Length: 434
Image (cartoon, rainbow, N blue to C red; front, side, top):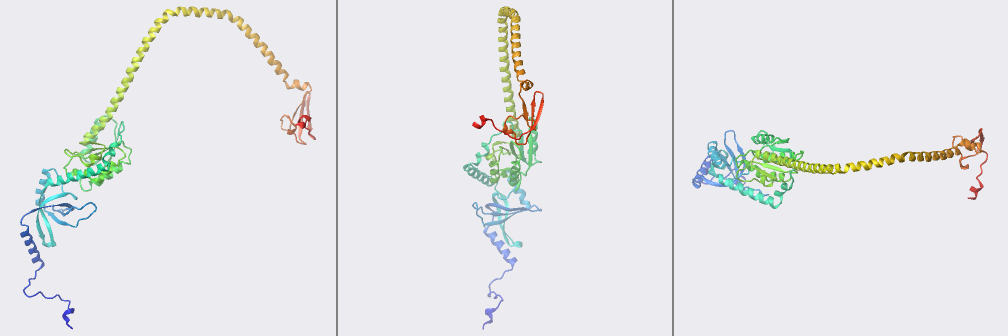
């Protein structure tokens, strides 16, 4: 049997066929890439897994954007060295874009490189197109607004009614930010008794959207009239956190009106679109709340002024009417007094006869009452031969039904009492006939 069929040793390379070491192959790949891509090129994609090292370098994956609900397997590693990062940051700053973040759609300038120590193909980033980022942000924001508008979500919070005097205010922002300080300073300057309940929430960075959402949800459990969602400006990239879909839906679900003051100078954020009322800055929100209360106070003062004016006019009319009545009364007063005096004289003359008649009538009535009372006196009735029989408990016996055989009976007569025991009872013939 041929032992070569069962050999585990790899066959030797054919004579004349080259064999490479790992380092040699890496150098060949790097050289080949240099020949194919001799110059830097533009590459579009979405940032993922961004990591900033302590040395100042930035690493991330540039992935092919995938449709919602799907996953893209196309990705390239990107490195941005610290020296080049200063150039890239300057490009971003000129367009007020801000920092690179996960999920950001970008178009970068890069060299295609092979990194032998890790055996990895990567892009060495050398520049960026900020306008592409802004256009992508704008397109994504517009698409989200259109989708939310189609669902009716952009109108949900706007349909809520702001209380007449919204003095209980919820504030969701970074507690140490200038936005919080400006808001509270302006609110205090109004002179009204606002009560502020604040929730500290991050307004910048990758976790800002979820932090703001959690802050709003916590505020929904507080007894507030309105909620102020604020940030004191920033780059358009930093403010993109307010274009987050979940944050927008949370605002739409608020049980009270939400006022936004985010600091956009040009574009309205998605949060602005779904909020009840939008202001440019945190200070503007506070001034707006002060204006609402001030208008109520002015309306109340005008109302009371109207009431006072009507009361004054009514009082003046009454005073004039009273003066007129007084003038008329002074003319007719003497005749009225004379007639009253005449009636009083007649009454005085008739009073003795009337009093005598009333006294005689009362005397006769009293005598009749006294006669009836005397006739009903029990002692008079007993003297006439009547008697009163009571049971042992003192109750008056009115019927044989109240007497049992053997009962002790006490009979009162005119000159004493008779005690007897009942041995026989008999209903009257009239009752028997019934």
